[in-house]
Length: 338
Ligand code: G3H
Ligand code: ZN
Image (cartoon, rainbow, N blue to C red; front, top):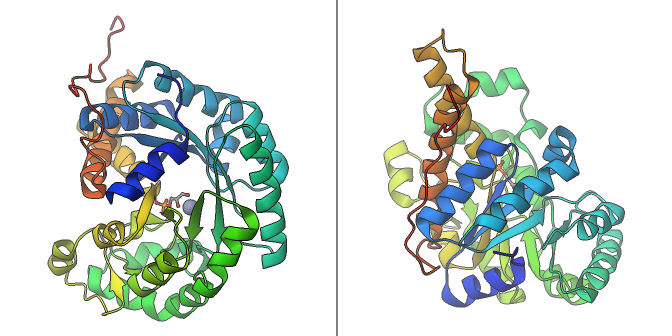
């Protein structure tokens, strides 16, 4: 079916109290994993093209992978620009057929962020496309830890990892969060359609152990009626039961991903976890048969592992079963001659 815009599916998600998963189009296998998950779960889905994917695959390749799967899909698929870096990049993406744009002006002074977000929104709206913009700044874990430190840290029990991150990154993550008193004005001046607000998450975490700030989501929800977007969701603890099982204590003003969806998060961006599931699936397969010569037979278990992860997220977000249909899809398999 033709690509959907994020506006139509996010508005419905907001009205009905669930969230849409937004997963990154990093390679053909991950794109297939996401689309197969969406078909099987009967879920609308957002495939987003990140700056890393543009560098890796090129804008045309990344765009066309998503367009190709969307064409054949029986669920709504959105082609979204993730963390668009400039006005010009947004215009290029609009030109090549994206159905949802994002401008990330979080590194700029607020007035400049507003100005550029507004300019992009005006142009996008002229052709019926929605725009997401960022308020506050969602940091990345590399801002606080070196690769070696992360490697050491992830070997420790989950609760200890959280304690260390709280101490080293916590105050800065809090400082960078979106200010609810600026949100209404930001939305009004820019005209955007969804708000990527920094609500305590950190990009690029290796495990789902970190809480979101419930108080901030609630305040932003009151300040603006737009669909809220959660970035950096791979690192966010999914449920209370997970927190308990991992021995992680949440503070009263914190919440899980599942709870965040209930209080107003309508789009959940997950990238790192999909990538890690893919790597682990492929790695395990290769370890089991180091003499394998056919790369597809090693990549396929990666695809299947990331697909299962995405299906789990879709159920958690409540977007499963929102599209009518059977969910019967032809699963990935190697059909070529051996
Ligand atoms: O924009 C992309 C996301 O925010 C992904 O973050 O890699 O931490 O899941 P993540
Ligand atoms: Zn992000």
